[in-house]
Image 1 (cartoon, rainbow, N blue to C red):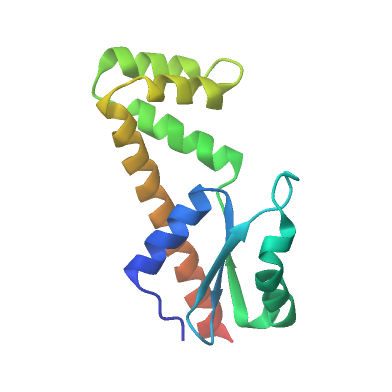
Image 2: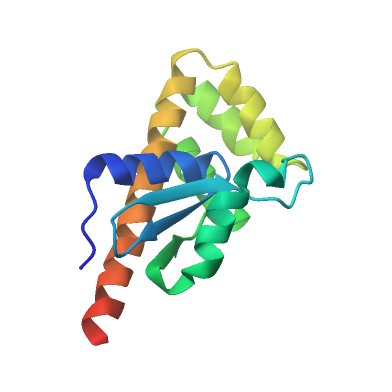
Length: 145
C-alpha cells in the first residue's frame, strides 16, 4: 500500500519543479530524487549509488512524471488569465504569443513585484495537484493488480 505524507508530496512537487526525477519506494516509503543527466552538466558519479539502487530494484519503485512543456505553457496561460492587474495580465498574455514565450513570461514575472511570489505559489499548487493525481493513478493500478 502506498503511504505518502503531505510533506513528501510537497518535496516531490518541489523536486519536479527543479527538473529532478522522483521515485517512490513502494516497500520502504522512501523518496529518491536526482537530476536528469540529459544536459551533460551534471556529474553522474555523484548519483551513482541512487541510480544503482533503482536499476537493481526497479520493480520496487514508482516514478513520478514531470510536466511536459505543453503542460507548463498551459499553467502559464492559466496564471496570466487570472492576474488581477490588467496591465500585467496583458503583458503576460502577450508574452505567451511571441517567440520564446517561456523566457518572455519569466522576464515579466521576475519584474512584477509581489506577482512573482504569486506565480511561484500558483505553480507549486499545480505541481502538488499533479503529484496527487499521479498518486491516484498509482492507487488505481495497485487496486487492479
